[in-house]
Amino acid sequence: MTEDQYTNETFMFTVGHDHELWVHDWGNKDAQTPIFFLHGGPGGQCKDRHKFPFNPKTQRVIFHDQRGSGQSLPVGELQHNTTQELTSDITRVADRLGIKKFIITGAPWGSTLALYYAVINPERVSAVVVGGIWLATKAENAYMNGGGWRTHFPDIWKWYTSTVPAEHQSDPSAYHFTQALGNDPSKAAESARIFGDMEASLISLDDRHVPTPAEDYDPAGSLIEIQYMAEGCFMPDRYILDNADKLTMPVHIVQGRYDFVCPPSAAYELHRAVPHSTLSWATSGHASEHETTTALGLIYRQLTR
Image (cartoon, rainbow, N blue to C red):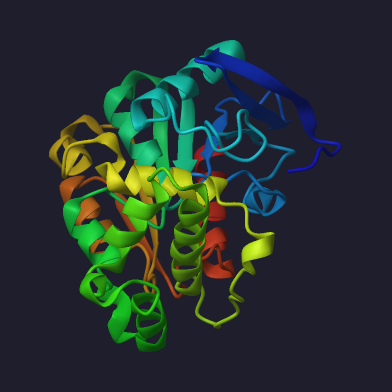
């Protein structure tokens, strides 16, 4: 993410255990209710395209790269990198900026972290806006990592299962998770690359993904995601749904109808668990496509006008 005329400040922020977060404060500093944006992954990063739904003339948005991700340091660090620690980091950043209450928003993994934060710290959240819902349930993990998407991507499933020994082809992700979190760096990098390419193949409706050559691949982000997936995102099964009664603030959900990474059923289940929430369906896949970002932008505008 680059600085521009609307950048208030960009800084590195120490949060403990040798982790430093990259933070980008952007937009109208006089905006009444700041927005905290949480990137995807886990292990993703903030990019310039994430600014698209926001209006810096009227809105103030706080971006930060989560532990081990993007421009935060150390890159790819897995120690002291859990959902609970990322949640504490959001409060630390808000306190550093003197922000007491804010709109929290994010998509895919960002939706998980936003919802978890709002459950844990409802007094700090004025509204939740989430897209591409991932609730970190066992059912979602079984769908994603067990190939529930294979009916629509049979060619990707055939390739993915071919990357593991025959005895592991019923659950190739489990094999790659074991390799990625093992003690052999070359095997870890290769399994992280394969898992990352599998996931990237599912995110768009236009088949635009090109597999990453091994020599050009940085496994740091995928290794963080794999650790979180292997650990159930460091929360009990259905934790967000079972604590949905704590989401008393406005909750707005946007979901791609054709998302093959985050099954749309999760968004619908969240909507039913939070009866006062709104649910908007977008004609899009998993990627931050025009329909999804436009719908999110309209919600941000309504909440900050």
